Structure formats: C-alpha cells, structure tokens
Length: 123
Image 1: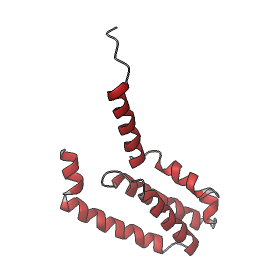
Image 2: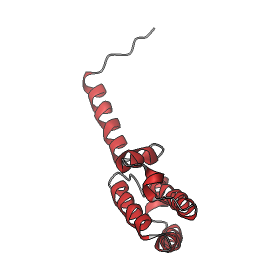
Image 3: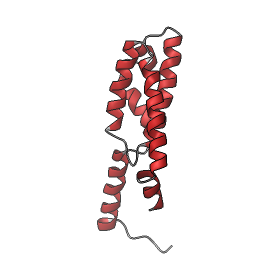
C-alpha cells in the first residue's frame, strides 16, 4: 500500500517526473520530423498499456529517445530503427514493463484458479 502512496501522492516525485518529462520532450522536438512523428505515435500507443503510475513506461520512452537520437545522428531513416512493423517494435519495448494486459491476465487466471482450480496435493 505504501508503494501506491509513493507513486500517486508523492508531490516531490510527481514534480520531478514532470520536469524530467519536459526535458525529454525537448529532445524529441530537436529530432527530424519523421522521428518526432513516429515517437509520438509509439508513445500514444504504449500509454494504452501502462499500468500503475507509468514510471516503467517513462523509462522506456526515454530509452527510445536515446535510440532515436543515435539513429538520427547516424543518418538512418526512422523505420530502419523500428522496422516496418512498428506495432511489433512496440511489443518488444513493452516486454519488460508492467502493463494492464498483464494485470488482466493475472486476474483472469487467479479468478479461475480460485473457482475451479485443482486442489493442491499434500504430497
């Protein structure tokens, strides 16, 4: 329960996160237009899956900014970084993050196990 309060009601943490987010978005605005467009599309897509306070998602976005900046500096096209299947690229980015789909999956399995699961053997 204390994690809940630390994530949702910690004003100092929220303000620091907001300042960091603004710094990171300035980096996005400095990228070529096609990189900005793809970043914003990925960002919007990924937020649909964010769980909790979204701090996991922010770390992923900041790492993506690093990746995109490096790609732009190397003169690569943005789709050379993401590949043509940008949705699959997003899924790969989300592998390490806590997502709502993961929460829903756990809840589904837990509810079914409670109701009809096999009794544990006393072995």
